[in-house]
Length: 248
Image 1 (cartoon, one colour):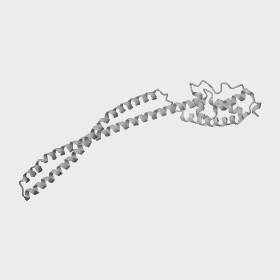
Image 2: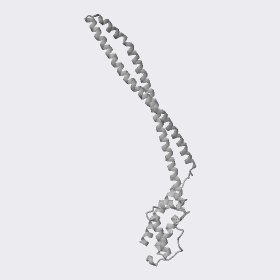
Image 3: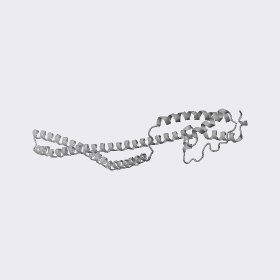
Image 4: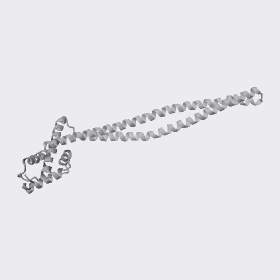
């Protein structure tokens, strides 16, 4: 049957339906039909039955059966959306917890590093004090060597070597001390910011948990709804193609 033989109202309705569903996935069509803000129903202007080819009539009936507001298919889709949204919220909570754990580990690592560097700093300063105390012996030896003589000269040389060695060690120790102090101060300064991030993360966790608690939780039926939706999507695609072919 040619489109020219179909009543104008019926043909206009079919064209309108095809236009509305063109390049629209089944999931998008379900979303539009279940959207509370969408007051327009795809099928509200369907005319009375008229003479159309049998396959076109079946296609119209099938698409309407799948997508009329309140259909079992849309009910299954809405239940799937509820489960999906709850799953996404649970994933968001996991992400927050991972972030909190990461901050805790960073704080703990900073504290361990600070403790280790402070222990090293105490050891370095103790060694520096000991080396400074050792200055007395080589300096006394150097003074005694001022009396002259080969033996005194040898002692003076030994004292000089000892003094230079101590100075070198002290210089290295002072450099290490300065580096340790800088690192301890830097890490200590970062802790308040990390604690603030931790507090923010805990607040966010409570907020996300409250969102989850406010969501409906469906028990069972997931597999059954998925079977309904998969079959409905196949039938939707097949019958929209029939309608498109009719008005092409």
